[in-house]
Each structure stands twice: as structure tokens, then as C-alpha cells.
Image (tube, rainbow, N blue to C red; front, side, top):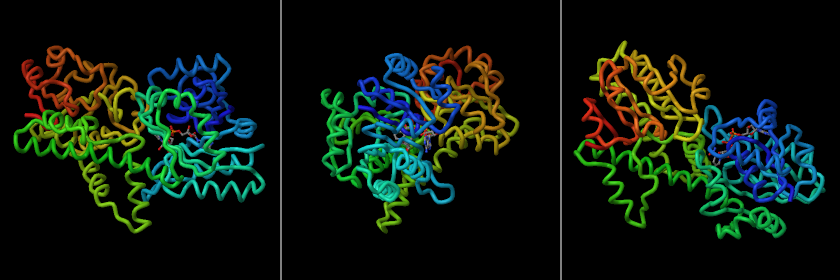
Length: 434
Ligand SMILES: NC(=O)c1ccc[n+]([C@@H]2O[C@H](COP(=O)([O-])OP(=O)(O)OC[C@H]3O[C@@H](n4cnc5c(N)ncnc54)[C@H](O)[C@@H]3O)[C@@H](O)[C@H]2O)c1
């Protein structure tokens, strides 16, 4: 089947390459000519492990191509996926659906035959209804069905998540659309990935409910970490102790500097806006958003506190700035608020990140980016581990202590055993551990 992916970002590019790898004929359309040119030249516009190889092999096999020409991309397709961004709308936190609706209008003008239009972007309940209304208004004679198929892949593990999903949610009540979606996902279905068919609005809400639940789990353990610090308990043991209960589960119980990234912050906000519009307040999610927002800046204060409070003119080195390892994504990364808090206190900040520095530079003005962790530590009054890249898991601690002005280590990801770091003469603090 010919599949068209509108939007070649983290989701569109990974999904498109994986669909091609299943044997489908995939065209990725993006309105950013630089992105398409780079992809045609074999250069990945994002950092995602394994993506370059997957794209290259499917391009070579003739199953994957890239274009800015939406009309040509959509012609003859059996399914068109909308995978454009849905960022928070400036000012009010609603999801900005302008890219989705523009893509819809473009599809209406370009479609040539019976078509299934699938929203893979994360969109509020009712967006599918509006997409369908636009298509029917602009192409009244077209045979078209609109499906919600939210995506659950995680950056950094996107390919394996897409190819081995816990579940595939398909929101449609249209028989033909259901058959097309079964055909699209047949290779995964054969691999026993459960396909869950629901009503379209239900599918849209599942995505927000999933992200809000995960954000709640993270925020819960972060608050427990604060309590651990106050009472002298160890949050890693608390997480293990509760996570072994099957009803709770051990995942997403790693205390840290607060969630960030391209999804949780904007999706929790958008869910609150939907809840507000329907006059069904979601108090738990409201609290999660507030607690998480406050936490990021508090991490900056934690670093200041570790230096003894008097910070003006001092130098702090940050290890990692992306919102998590194995991605170059800086959207809503905790490092942004941490750097701001440090700079507000008159601290000079240096940083190193294995893949995120190009994306970080415009977002972290005034930060001195270095080539490796040891250059960051040079002359620093404190070092903070912000993102747990593998590269930071086995640092040469004596070497770091040797080049720092004062050996203060703030481990915001609980990567190191405290005794190991302290043995090398560091004043060490972490999250929720004595
Ligand atoms: N990034 C993730 O981990 C992730 C995971 C699950 C779901 N999602 C959701 O998927 C959607 C896309 O996220 P992303 O991170 O891939 O975004 P992104 O910003 O990386 O990519 C979006 C792409 O769409 C392109 N685009 C915008 N309007 C277009 C149009 N009319 N025609 C063609 N191209 C257009 C942009 O140029 C951009 O390249 C969002 O709704 C997001 O919430 C993201």
C-alpha cells in the first residue's frame, strides 16, 4: 500500500521509515525544504539511534522517499498520516492545531481517490471530527474516512517502540478504514501486538490519559524523593519497594529533575484545557503540572545550595542538557529552567551534551559549551549531572576532582552510588538519597 506521512519530524520520520521497513511504499512530505534536502542526501535532521541506517536501507530498496510536494505525495495513497507538530498555543496552553488543519486542507486539495486520513499527531478530543468536517467541506464528493491513531513511541528508543509496541490504538467506526488500518499494521499484528479498536474520540483521549498518567507517576516519585530527603530515607529503595507490587509496576519511578520533552508538558496542559472546556476539572493533573513546573527551577536552587549558597561569580558545569538521553530534543528540557535559575544568581554556566548542543545553543544563551565533561569541570565550583547519557555513567572521578576548583557534585539522576563519589573527596548530593 502507498502510505503518505505528512510531517517528517521525530514521529513522522520514524513511523514512515518503519512502515517502509514493513514493506509499504512510503512518501514523507514536509514543508521544510532544508529537512527534505538533508534527508535526500542521507543526513538525518534529528538524532535517533538506528534511524540513519533504517532510512538508508529503505531508500535504497525504493520503498521510502521524501518530498516537499504534498500533491504528488498524496496522489494514489491508500492512507495519509498527519504527523505534524501540535505545540502548546502561545498564551493559553491549548494544543495549537493550525498545522493539523493546514495539512488537512492540503490533503483535501490533493486527494485523487478513496482515502483514509489518519491523525498520528497528538490532538485533543474532537479534532478528528473537525478534520472530517474540513475534508467534507472542501472535497464533498471524495470517499474519505478519518481515523485517530495516536503514537506512543519514546524518543531515544523510537524504532524499537514503533516496531514492538505495547498496543496500537485505532479510533474509527468505519469498516473500510478499519480494513485499511489492519493492512497498514498487519506485520505488527502478526507479531502479536494488540490492535485496540475504539471510537475516534476515545482514541484521542487515550493518548492524553496515558501521558497524564505517566507524568503523574514521575511527579509522585519526585515528591516522595523530597520527603525522603526530609526524613532520611532512600527514594531508590522506596521505588523498588513499591514497584515490585504488580499493581504499581517499577517503570517511571525514577526520581529526577522533573519531566520535560516534546510531549508531557504540552499534553498535560492541553488535557487541562479540554477538561476546562467541558467543565470537568482534572485536579490531579493540575497539581502534577504545578509541581513539575516548580521543580525544574528548584533544581537550580539545589545546585546553589550545594555550593553553600554564595554563588555570584562562581562557575557551574552541567553534564547533559537534553530532556533525556539518546535524543537531541531540547523542548521543555529541565536544563532550561536550571540554567535560568543559576544565571539569575550570577553563576557562570558551562555545559556539555553528547548530541544536544546544536539544539541547545539558541535556548541557553550565555552558556559556554565545551567539548567533553572534563573541559566542563575545569575550574568549576560545582558539577551537576542533568541528563543520564551513558557517557556520564563511568566518569573518571579523580580526574574531575583534580580539575575542579571545588569538588561539588550534584547528581540529579541518581546515577552514582553516593559512597563511590564521596570516596574521591566530593561533596555529593543527589535526589532523595542520604
Ligand atoms: N516526539 C515524540 O516523542 C512524540 C511521541 C508521540 C507523539 N508525538 C506527537 O506527534 C506529533 C509530531 O511530533 P514531532 O515531535 O514529530 O514534531 P516535529 O516538530 O519534530 O515534526 C513536525 C514536522 O511537521 C512538519 N510540518 C508542519 N506542518 C506541515 C504541513 N502542513 N505539511 C507538511 N509538513 C508539515 C514540520 O516542518 C516538522 O518537520 C505531535 O502531535 C506530538 O505531540 C510526538
